[in-house]
Length: 119
Length: 136
Image (cartoon, rainbow over all chains, first blue to last red; front, top):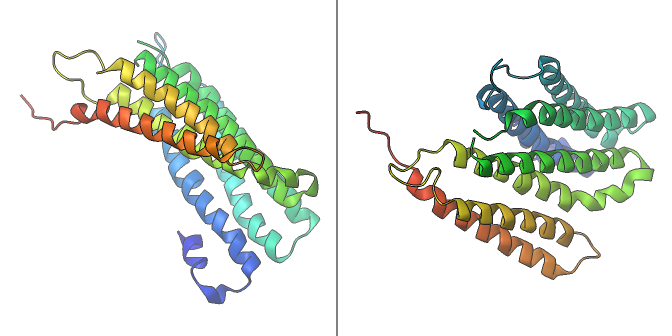
């Protein structure tokens, strides 16, 4: 939401920074809020296979949580930085943020897939 | 979970991983000239995530969890939901590809029509299942 405010304030300066903040704003809301809320509610509500009735592999579940948030945080820092002061470190951080977010979705899909089953 | 919900949710998970994978390559493409081509895949990323993942997951969970009509078929009109599943996924593929520069605009238009038809079918299925709850 703060990034959304930032892109509406013209005095925040350079066009390149605005262009970087817009996708960041979308992804903070769509990944950080909507997708993460779906991940959490699905982990809680989806059927747990009998007889153990376990939620699934907790390591994968926590990995999804950590990777999603670490990736998003890294993106929030590196994407605007790429627009203002590009350098090899910033580029590497942005690539790492992309990889972390992708790994988070793989970990979530792997935990939830066995819990989507017919009754 | 009904079989149609299993298919809807699992197809949504496939769209999530595909869409996130394309999005990750496109994000990395901002940092690496070698991956700059991937920025053209943005329409596929958006379509997979917004429609293929988010909307389809909502369809799957709603079909599973909405109240069932007393005396009605279990889960309502199953054929309508399966048709919505087929149309939605055909639409996502057509719109995703239709957003690419080399593909005809007809793919985009027909894909959107298929998505609208899927939404209408699902909404008309779900409408009678959305009822107020009166405790006995």
